[in-house]
Length: 385
Image 1 (cartoon, rainbow, N blue to C red):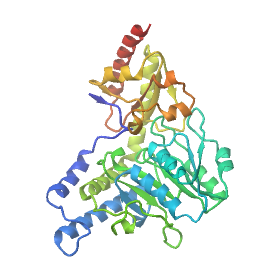
Image 2 (image 1 turned 180 degrees about the vertical axis):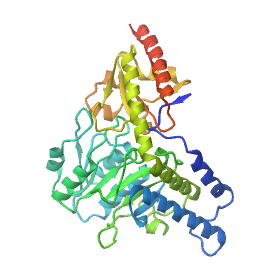
Image 3 (image 1 turned 120 degrees about the vertical axis):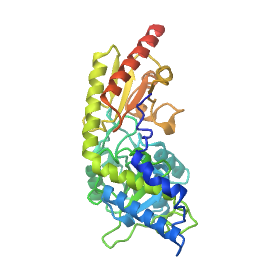
Image 4 (image 1 turned 60 degrees about the horizontal axis):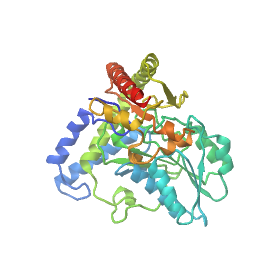
């Protein structure tokens, strides 16, 4: 089996698994306990993991709120900032191609009186900065724009967006869902003009069920007013109740350490695979289009429209040999809102697959996958005709 669905989740790094094992079997104390050795050991392990993640993202340790993953972090940040806002009629600005955890949260808040502006995008998934500027009002409380798109690989200029927002008003809170960007591009949270970002460990070879919200402190070291999503505990500086998932947090810390060390090598490897994939597709008999052929992209996420065939047939026929997807795993039962937003019609959406790869993917995996896709494509194209 060739695995080409890294945008959905990545294989856990064996080094990560090795670090986690003892915290599943031997060192199982509650890190919020006191005095006894098991609690102290696990608290130290959590602190060490937090330090590794903070070093990776270039943030302060006390700016990291550990969550169950990016979906929780997105909900926590957006709902928490809006709830704590002093605006009478809070206004949110986001885009039409955000992850479902962003869009569903915005829809939830709309039902409770918030106004939400959903910015359109071009055929590469990029917003117009003028559209963003024109959308900002005196009532705008929060802007949420993803750093990297999980379906078409769009990579936005996060610094330019942040600068624009803060030039309009320093009071507007700017959040980015960085789930697909973390581990794929360099991130320096201390230098980008962003108030908060969210991420999941399982996107950079860590375990599932853990991630974080990084929230910037001001010049006096104070966090913004934000209402917890999960009440009932003093964990995570009182902002996220619940017993710490120690083994997962340890795994996230190790994954962050590895990703930090290997980032430049990984980036070069992924770009090489992307260019090879395009070359192999161009040599094949497949009639295809790359959705988002722009240079500002995550090279490990490739959306392909295969003209004349159903993506469902292609994916099912490949299932025992090559793992690809139709798009986001969080919206698998619905037509892609991302592809619709960039201008694809229903037939094109039904003919589109997502190929995504990572550090364990090899050139031969790409070559053999294109051959397998071509074989299945030819089969179903003949049947269709």
